[in-house]
Length: 576
Image (cartoon, rainbow, N blue to C red; front, side, top):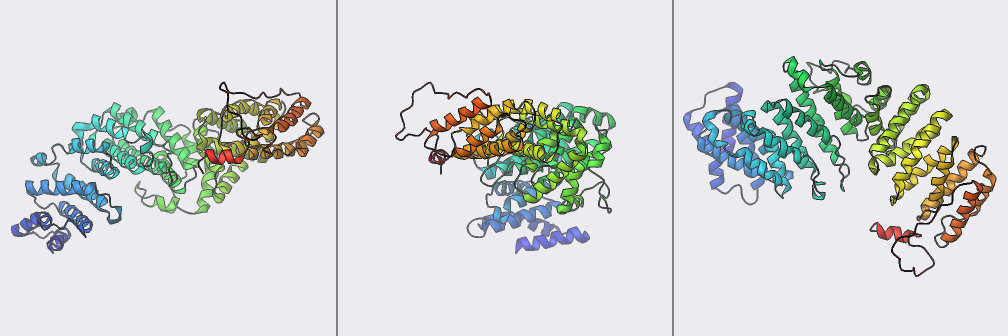
């Protein structure tokens, strides 16, 4: 009842500015103490009461009602307990964060109340390493709402500590995406409220840009997407803050290199496969492109990210932009068509392709169709940019070696290009010369069946170009691979390629006969399969692959099979 009456008093105070008597103010000051003394925070209904109390503290602080020092200390104590509440169902933690923001913003900016927040920042920073995820999240969110006057003396410590907690430092941190999200929001608040110097500003930018490469996954999927979205929101917030500063501060902060990194990161995210993340990236990129700053290829960026229509861009804010960009598949097709305009821009094409290959090689049919139609259509009409795209793909392949998140869909993208786009023989041959050695590195000691299967079709499509021997060498290795499914897929693809490109391959008929007559998925006679493969090598004048024997002798198998000849071995090793 006391809580309800106090909320009514405060609502009246806020709405029509009536004065509240001293007795009523004293009663408001005592509400939380009385609830605590009655034990209402414990037992059944305790979480609901904490949520209501946090709301009460938030509204009281917003009203600016006079509070005693003891009341401030008690309220801060209750909020500290609520901040580490693990029960998401009741929203206690979120309510506590909102209440702390109002309380600190209203009362902690006054020097007379400095004793109320002494040691507050140090305590929250120390709790960032707590074993309980709820404690870490609540402490980071608390730092994201404290005013600058409280945080400013600790800015160097905050940048270091929060920066560390935006990363995955150990395996147990993988699933704690919310901890990283809260740290990202906190470090964005530090930038906006604490007036950091030039060096500190650059450190914060570097931390946020590094968060754009968080692709951590767990059983829920790509949980790193939440971190990337939080980082983009923080970038938009601090960019808007920086642009309001003096021109020399803007020039000193947003250097040419930093602006390039920001745009490259946002361009990559704007063409990735998750709709929600893509919309956040497009909105953030739109805001950055239309700020009063100079960017490389600025005119092309404005074509790729056009102004928002129908009056949705109002007073420089983006409250309605999200609704515009959350439009349906119609906008998705339009966005990919416009993104292709960045292909001629040497500064951004690698970032564009690093995000686009993941979408082109993805599993969502509508998204794959929208992106592939735009991609194939653009390269078919503008053949002069084909070599630029192929160079960018090879560059991505070099920098993301052994990164299956990128490499597997990249192989599918290469297959899309070689199947649907007519390449000049010279351009295709140059691409294959660089592509095959990179494939060889990727497949060395590779046990990822999905990757092995995805690389077969691109390799066989490379046979259409001159100097096909390096490609055939790699296919011969796959033809006697330890997994029967890989051997069968390779034989089928090789047979199709031999029929399609018989004019480019000597004695294609003899090779076709051997491939067709051999049961390549047979797990019980690998020696016979190697003999047939070696016959093909002799016909094609290729070096015969040598079987590598380990340095340590292995016990003889009980049956006449090699260690990796059957699916049972594969199933056993992957844990099924």
